[in-house]
Image (cartoon, rainbow, N blue to C red; front, side, top):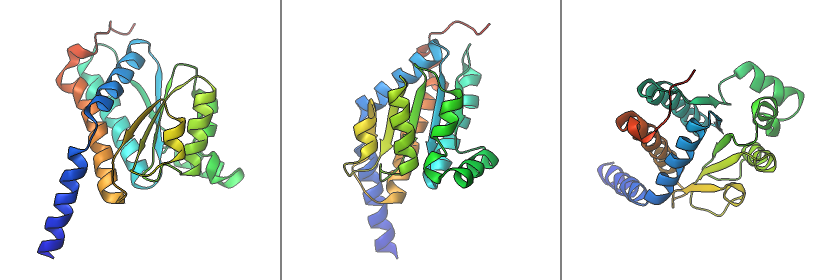
Length: 194
């Protein structure tokens, strides 16, 4: 057990060391642009990635926004269970993220898909729709070639395929983005909301 834990932690540290700093800088910049233009940010994923999406929306919508003169408009598409299950039941599970985007999203908004495989059909469909309709697109994915990476304007990739390690590294991407604004609110450079 000790050897397994030590090896897991070594591999986890390697995944974190491989986080592409310049891609995170671009991600923070994209969020800053969305904040300045009062754009909506949509985030989505399945399973652990759904939890990461909800966690990110909370940290950006509350934690980061509490430090800024203007608030982020962020929504985790994973968090309305009745709507999500109605869409899955009445259409298909592949539709659960694209349908809310059809209701709320506008050109210039931001769609952030999170998937270790990068091939989750509902995330792929949502990113494809977002791209076709002029949204800025971001994919947080694992280390294999995938459809989401092909669709996204910005790709935050972890060079690993272990679900736990990749999900942990994805949360690090998301925390870095939120804490950039929490710890350096001057980076936002926005006027107060009306």
